[in-house]
Image 1 (tube, rainbow, N blue to C red):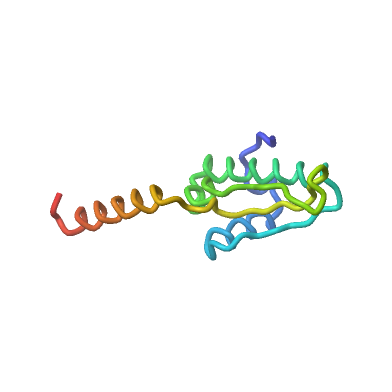
Image 2 (cartoon, rainbow, N blue to C red):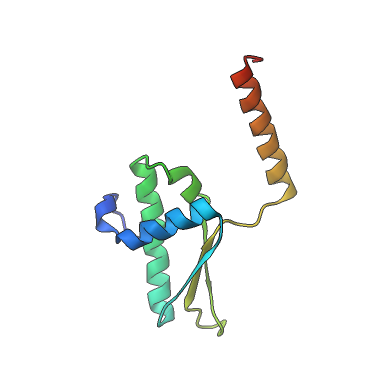
Length: 111
């Protein structure tokens, strides 16, 4: 995994993809020529997520929840990288509703 936290060392297109997925909440799929290339790019995306957090970027929190899945027509040689948010569960929705209610009460001066 890349260990540098300088955002300038990552291609701008990678950040654009992360931003697009975070804003639209729609998954992105990227096809590569080989499994080796797909795996390498997946690790570069992990490095970018780490760099966003280290630089306290505005996308850091949302991007940290993204999942990176390798898929493809051949299960033994996946060459497609799918980037998106994991599917939510009922408990996630429950806790999100509680957090929203607490935030609302806090703004209203109830707490």
